[in-house]
Each structure stands twice: as structure tokens, then as C-alpha cells.
Length: 182
Length: 316
Image (cartoon, rainbow over all chains, first blue to last red; front, side):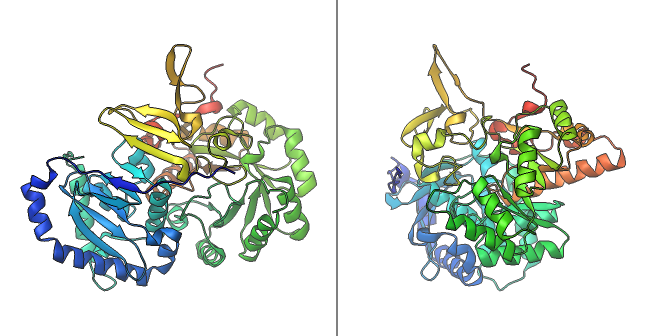
């Protein structure tokens, strides 16, 4: 049986990206955002161990999530104990298992399962490069966890009101025309 | 996703175990034994049925995996096992004579003789028809058939030789029939350039999409190729089945259950499609028109396009 191993996705540097003022400001302030998101990720790992188990070997992988409308990107290392989210420049070089690019609101909607990933792929609003199996495992793990937007924040369980507000804001944002760096 | 389907109004939900015994063996998908037991208990608590797909073809010398899956489905109190392989059906029938068996579309049973064989030999109670028959052909078939008939009404379409396709196997060495995956994701790559997105399967370029083009699944059957001086889809176009407009005809024909493809899709798809068909079927029960539900799902369709497929056979 022929099995084809997928090579890690190696992000290329994007000319000019380093000079973006907005990106520089975001990178300068990345510390609190990274701490917050990493805390949330590790909380999810404690609350939803079965979802992380679905990642299999990809628990040790690092994904690059690149909002198409932002000058920065996020690296996601979904390890159950040592998971971390980092903010990087959009064009920064790095080795990742895969890169997923879509408008930020679509990435958020994929996180809480309110957007169908296949439909987003059909209409080309989402782009995947690298190991497609790793991306599929991540997507199925997210789907199985029944996450809400509020789970991005390191809050105790509950917070229905906070989630309702976030979901409302996201729906409003998704109705706006997209712009971006792609 | 099982919960999303039930909460949206599905009467029954198909699922699979996390191995090669089901035809949606994708990374991170499906249940382990404990999850299947818990999911079945949850569904039964809400009056819904759980149907376990063990619908790949067991490999010589490795049939224990398929037998174990049958045993697991029975132990989990699944309402039915859906299978295609003669050996799997025989094992389930002999080892668990009280288990309800459905025949998967993978068996491609499209004649009353074939269906009668499965019913008599293995006690099959329901047959999922391959997507090759027109609505009048289904009506004629049901008149000669001793078991319940189930028909697909929404979702992805396969080349019209279900259970017998070797395209994925040719390109990647893995197939839905034996491995549970068509176009295994580790064999798929997307290469982006400013001009186009090139989809490759097992290293073979199968499509090149311009900026405005809709995409389909990265399968050989949905690929575009150069032939006889033009570039086009050689096998089939990326398009989804939507037979909502035929619900009344299928019911009149005697179809007992309708099925939505897409166990590999997400909650958003499952919830919307299940809710739309629940509403349409309920409208049908009331004698209401179902037209208003027919265009609700186009954005979920492959390539953003829908077809009634073989049910209408407009090419004849």
C-alpha cells in the first residue's frame, strides 16, 4: 500500500510584511494576548480531553492560523499539557504542520462550529496548505468539543450572556464585506 | 454532530467507529467504544435511533476488526448495523441474530433480485438504494421488494458504481471500500500561486482553480482534465444531490426513510440540513407545499450547485 508522507508546511517570508506599522504594534502587545489564549487552550484541554485525544499524533504539531484580514497570524500547538498559542508576523518564517487562512470571523466561526468548513472550502473563503490530514483532525476535534466563542477566554464555565454578545458581534461582522491581506 | 442532528429533528443518525470499518474513516472523526455507548444512550433518551455504519469491505486475513465492530455496535445497543460486505453481514446475522441489519449503498443493490437475496440470506430489513435509479424506477422496485427502502436525498454524489470505485485506490493506494477513505487527506495537497490553486491527489494534479472558481472535493472523479482538446470534468461535476423537490414522489413510491450524506461534515451543515428536511417532511405530512425549503441549502452544496441527479435523469 502506497502511503505518501506530507512534508511540514514551511511558511515563506512575505516581502514588506516586516514594515507594517500595525503588525509591529500588534507584535509589541502580543504578550497579554498570548497569555490569555494559552490559558484558555490549556483550560479546554482539561475540560475536553476527548477532543484533544482526537488529534492523535497531531497533539505534538504546530499549526499556523492566518486571519486573511490581519497583518499577524497565530501559531497553535494543541498539546494537552503544554499547549500554547503565539502571535507572529503574518509573513514570519517558520515550520508548521499546516497553514489555515480565512477571514478572522470565519476562523472564529469554525472554532465554534457555526460555519461549515466544507462549504467555506467550496466557496474558497478558507485556504489550507500543508498537511490536510492534520487540519482535518483539528477541525474534527473542534467540532466534537461543542465549543463556544466564550471558550476563547479563560473564564469559568457558564457565561451564557458573554457568549451571546460575542456570537452577536461575530454574526454582525460576518455580514460585512471582507477585506484583507490574504 | 450526532447531537446536532437529533436536536435539529433527525429521527435516526448514522455514525461509525474510529477505524477502517466505516466509509468515513477520517482523522479525528467517529466514536470509540465508550463514546458510542454514551451517544446511543443520549439519542435513545430523546427518542432517536443510532445506526452504526460498518460498511467497508473486510480484508482477507484481517476480518477480526470488522467482527469486533459488529460486536461493539450490538453491545452499545445500536438500533441497526449498516453493512455491505457479505462476510460482515453473515457474521452479524449469525453471531447476533436479533441485530437489525441494513444494507449500505456500498453494496449497490439496485434490483429486486439482489435485494431479495440480502433479505433472505442475512435477514436484512432495510436497503439504502444506490443513487442510480429514477423516482419511477424506485417505485417499480419497491413493488417487488420485501424490505424497507431508504433513499439519499441530500449531499455528496459518487460516481455511479458505488462500492466498486477504484479511483482513489489508483491514485493513493487507499479507497473508501477497503480503508474507509476516499482521497485520504495525507495524499491531498493544495498549491497556491497568484494565478491559481492547484489540487493534487497522490501527486497528480486533478484540478486548477482560478480566483473565481468554486471548489469541489479533491477526488479524482471531480477532477478536471485535458481531453480531446478541451479541459473539463471527465467523470462528474462537483455538485451536491438535493432531492427535496422529490420528497412527495419518493413517499408515494413507498420509500420508508430518506438519508442525508455528510457524516464528515460539521455541526453547521448537519443542523441546517436536518432542520430543513424535518420542516419539509412535516409540511408534507400537513399537506403543505415544500417549495420554500428547496433553496435553503444551496450554499452548503459542493461547488455551490445542486442536482436531482438520477432521480430525474434529465439526460435521457
